[in-house]
Image 1 (cartoon, rainbow, N blue to C red):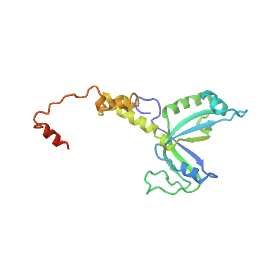
Image 2 (cartoon, rainbow, N blue to C red; image 1 turned 135 degrees about the horizontal axis):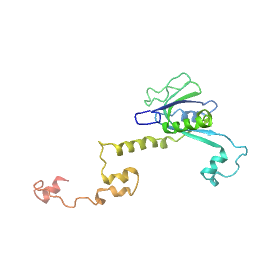
Image 3 (cartoon, rainbow, N blue to C red; image 1 turned 180 degrees about the horizontal axis):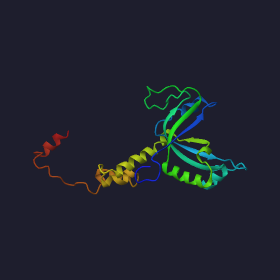
Image 4 (cartoon, rainbow, N blue to C red; image 1 turned 90 degrees about the horizontal axis):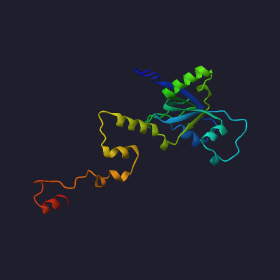
Amino acid sequence: PRVGESVPAKVSAELTYTLANTMHRVRDEWDQFREHDVVFLVTLEPPATQFTGRLEDLDVGEFREAFGVTYIRGAEILEVLDEEGNVISDPNPRDRKTPVGDVRTVRCILDSGQYDQDLDFMTRSGGDIYSSLNLVIRRKAKENNFKAVLETIRSLISSQDTAIPDWLHNLFLGFGNPGAAQYFRMPTQIRKFDWRDTFLDRDHLLASFP
């Protein structure tokens, strides 16, 4: 742990899955993982009675019981390797290699706080949460940057060297009316300004801004 903290500084893990018997399009999608992408690791324990109703009629709690969702954990990808150990998640297209084989190994980091809680739970219960995870869920590429966005916002807000003006706070955090940040709607806009001898007369002003 870091100084002053009780949770591990970093928790690394490896997960392995196979793309055998998948369509070419599906294989390409799973091979598009990049560093900092987030995946969800799920433990599914199907109930004895199969659910036959409509998904729209289930709330969150009922969905978990109907499909046997036991645990959900998040992981941030560091790199993806093929069967020969080649890194296929290189962000540079020129250095990206064609994957070999069907098996993929993902090196990732887990949530340190959640892992610390899980260790305590597993010590008391005698179970093993992480060996029971049997499903990997990926997000759409356009939606998979939320963690990076949140970390950027947090670093900017908490930084001592970065000063965000008050009028940008709500807009930056996604609250309020975006149009309120336009200069002509701000209550602090300057109505009059003394240019002194910058412009000689009205004709000089108009000629300066053709």
